[in-house]
Image (cartoon, rainbow, N blue to C red; front, side, top):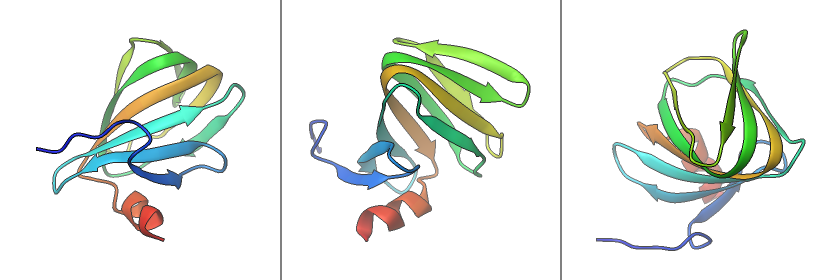
Length: 112
């Protein structure tokens, strides 16, 4: 068993100034903690990984195509593989993202 606290994982910047931390990554899934500030934007992107998560604190707007979804503390989300999506941060927020399989690109960035 492994147990760690937030702040003890591998740090990386995925999108410009948005801070992320790999909490755990195994052969099948990855836990990524993401901290954002008001006004930050995660630009539209897509990836072959399935993504599920929860907003641990704050408020944001998740966008997929023409659809906009308000996400706030306690809201869960599911982004299917290759689904285009972006995020507009409204309040300082923390998200826990779970990817399956793990994001190889994030693992490479974290190891640099």
